[in-house]
Amino acid sequence: MTNRRDFLVTSGLALSTVALGTLALPRSVRSAPAGPALGPVGVQLYSVRKAMQSDFAGTLQKVAAIGYKQVEFAGLFDHSASEVRGMLDRLGLTAPSMHVPFESLDTGWDAVLDDARQLGCRYVVVPSIPGALRASLDDYRRVADKFTRGAEAAAKANLRFAYHNHDIDFAPIDRRLPFDVLLEGSDPKLVGIELDLYWIVRSG
Image (tube, rainbow, N blue to C red; front, side, top):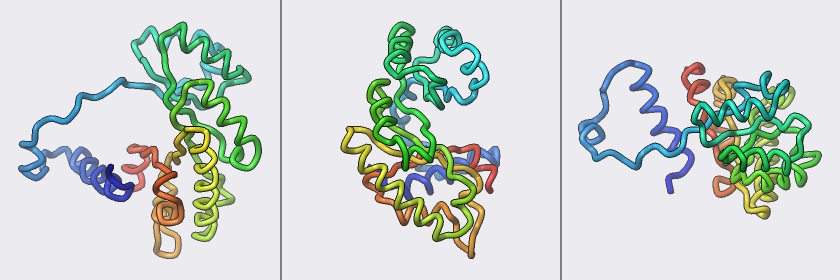
């Protein structure tokens, strides 16, 4: 398995090439045999959060009708995990992962993990860090430690933990990238990265 830093560097190379609109990849990469086919394409339901809020079941049904097979939840909107799992099963959908609030790491983490298991998730993903915890590199170190502790509990529940980056994670603080501090301060065996390519490009 590739480590997190190698994965990020490789992704950055590919993004640079796409962003420049060129095929300036090394010959060995261009001539290499194609890798495995792309698996099922999913949708992050945050993209349709207003529709989910007003018509949860109907929105899931439309997502399935479009042809999606996988979804990533960004809230259950007062529906129980068991109720939502029933909807997924009826529609032929799966939820490999779900976004969960940062605050749940301190309050209700066990309940979050239980919901994830009921939904059939393999990953729980924290999608953002509160602004008050981004002021310094020491803040990021404390967050990294919190991520590792949350990931330890997730692992005991047979789940993986990941963080979903934003552009602010690449805004230097004291001449260092906060994202690097997160990587250095968290356990790479337990804490994964759900790399958001849009925010990577936007951050430069």
